[in-house]
Image (cartoon, rainbow, N blue to C red):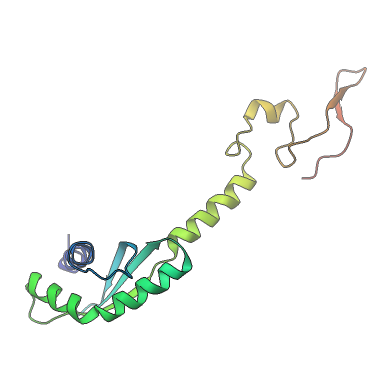
Length: 151
C-alpha cells in the first residue's frame, strides 16, 4: 500500500477515535468518518463524514466539528508523526442518502426485489401494478389480457 493511502487511513482512524472518545460536545450526533481525501503533498485533507439522524442533527454536528477543528488537528499532528500538521476540512458525505434513493428506485423497477417471484411474472402477474387483471384462457390455448400491459 503506497504511503499516501497509509496516511489517509491513519488520519481516518485517528479522527474517528478522537471524535468518538475525546470530543464531549453534545451537538455531535452519531458520526461516521466515511473517507479521507489527501492532497499529493499530504498537507490538506478533506474528511468526509455521515451523520445518522434528522437535518437538525446534521447542522449541529457540522457546527461542532468546525468549532473543534483546531483541537482535532493538533491531536492528529501529535499521533501521526509527520513533519507538518495536515490541514483538515470536514465535508458531509451524502452518499448513504443517495444509495438509499437508488435502492428505492431499483425496488420500483425490479419486481423480484419487490417480493414478486419470477414464477408469478411468467404466470401473468403484472409487477408494475399489484392489482393486475386476471388472464383469460382463449379457445386456442393462448392466454390474453383483459387490458394491455403498461410496459
